[in-house]
Amino acid sequence: MPEGHTIHRLAQDYAARFQGTAPRVTSPQGKFSDAAALLDGAELTATEAHGKHLFLRFRTDDWVHIHLGLFGKVGFGAAPAPPPTDTVRLRLATDAAHVDLRGPTTCALITPDDKRAIHARLGPDPLRQDADPAAAYARIGRSRSTVAALLMDQKVIAGVGNVYRAEVLFRHGIDPYRAGRDLTPAEWDAVWADLVALMREGVRHNRIDTVRPEHTPEAMGRPPRKDDHGGEVYVYRRANLPCLLCGTGVRTAELAARNLFWCPACQRN
Image (tube, rainbow, N blue to C red; front, side):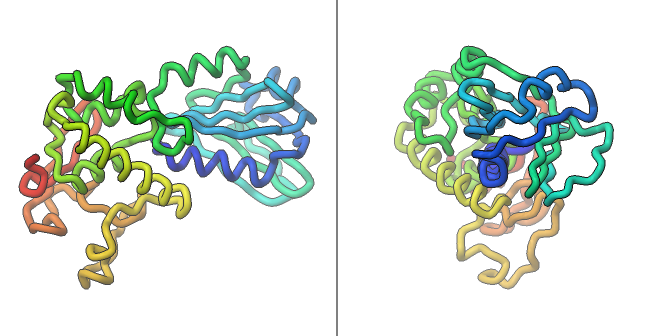
């Protein structure tokens, strides 16, 4: 499932190509046809992301809510758009560009009240200007759940996925099995600031890189990472490989139905 930086990047990409235009809106697959007909030729006036949720505004208050889920894909292209396949849920097209949405968990036309309800159930997003990290810590600081589980709970923090979860805990030497209530305010402030910086870089480069300059392949004289997810990381999907810092084998275990990765030597706090 895409992490929050990907959704914020998509919001930027939709805006760059379509904001201020009145695109042709279609649903070749048919599942969004009625809503597409209502939006066809209407101006796209804004785009927004909160965690893993993408919002496209048409006119003044017609919002399309998109959640990619595990299988959703977005593909941008130039004009003229090729004939669509029957897997395209939503297509926007102008004389300059087109974009196809395939396989999302959610693609729905919603009201402003619906949108407010979605925001209300999500935690603060490190990439949003209105994010309140204290609201997240208010939940973390009184919870007996593990820090690793809390970081993945979108009601606590929106947008953090498996990669950022594993990497930020490693960068701060935090045992992923620590209870949230044992995380100090100072530790949380450092973790939040790091998430903000890392995820902003993720938006900028459209990939996740979490290693510090002194631990890059060039600095360490090691081969670059080869993985479908791309990016240089410390522990994510490096199970049983030596830790880049101490050489201990990286461990993995299932936690809340997701694979957790950590270094037992470096993450003792």
